[in-house]
Image (cartoon, rainbow, N blue to C red; front, top):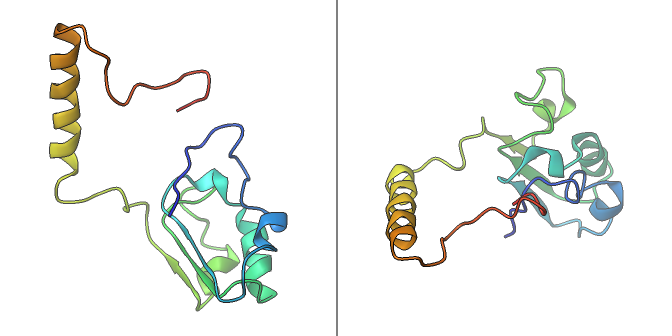
Length: 120
């Protein structure tokens, strides 16, 4: 599984060309960032039988418009951008904050530092 960040380099990464490389038995799962997958390309690939199905928690446009054809596909599972939620999410975020405060005080490198040049 891979959940790339949304950057200028990953926007539209999963498109007609890449979807053509999928096996017909494959399922696409996107719980990362919506703009990475071109939904119209995905819909066309599903219609052509290029992959078996998809599960999407994030979309190019959120919420996914009620008129989008993916809502009608039986082989597509759509969820309302909740994949990142879990019973320990807040605790994990707080632990990173506390760890970075400790590291900052001790002059140590921080964890989860954002590389602004690469957008993540």
